[in-house]
Length: 284
Ligand code: PAF
Image 1 (cartoon, helix red, strand yellow):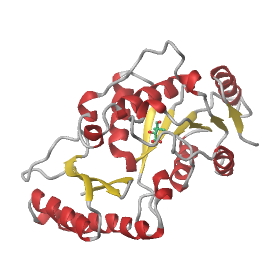
Image 2 (tube, rainbow, N blue to C red):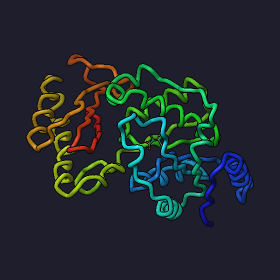
Image 3 (cartoon, helix red, strand yellow):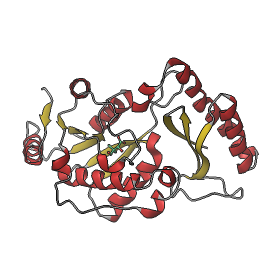
Image 4 (spheres, helix red, strand yellow):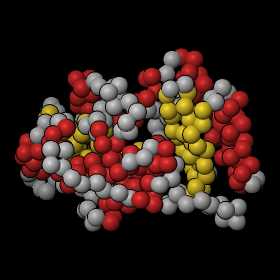
């Protein structure tokens, strides 16, 4: 069966109702894969995971203006709708929802969802309001679709924790299913922004995972600050000179951890290779 392309809320509701009451003849379950398009292997892995969890898979493509800061790349964000639909269909997606801005944010729209504690650190420090935009749009997509499952990658680990928290606090009956970061053959975490990198910059970026893995090997033998300083020095040595953050925080609540209790530690990195901002994280 070919993928159904839906652009408005009414269409979404009727498509989901049709699929839920379809040939399975039972209340079929629905998994959602929210994306901003520019579909790549990591999104495809989300769809594969969605299919394992539910009978119907809905992907969404919406470049959410609310999560971009004033000087960020909203206008430049890669858009490839036709190719995206094809890739989603090839992976077995049933419905793709591509709402317009005014469907998500009508003129009188006046809501922001904030998850303040989890949003105040790491990417939230530099990118003010970014996570409010993410939380608001994801809450809307979950409620619009009534999905039973939502699949998110661990590459955006802070986003994953924020969404898990908002779903719990708003009693949204949707199970958040995480998947491990999808990496290319060189270990580089797959991201839409990788396409901005030229071959020389990719060679530099490939070091990020190597350095993180090396740091993880030694983590339990040395002081936390030593691990951070090792990562910082190694990152600078390979030619990355703009570091947004290198931090080690608790895996569940993003709080600082101490040398006395290093379980649940995760290493988080955000760096710029020239103009391109890359993030990555690894469980220690
Ligand atoms: O991770 C993303 O692509 C976006 O932040 C998301 C979850 C689709 C919300 O716009």
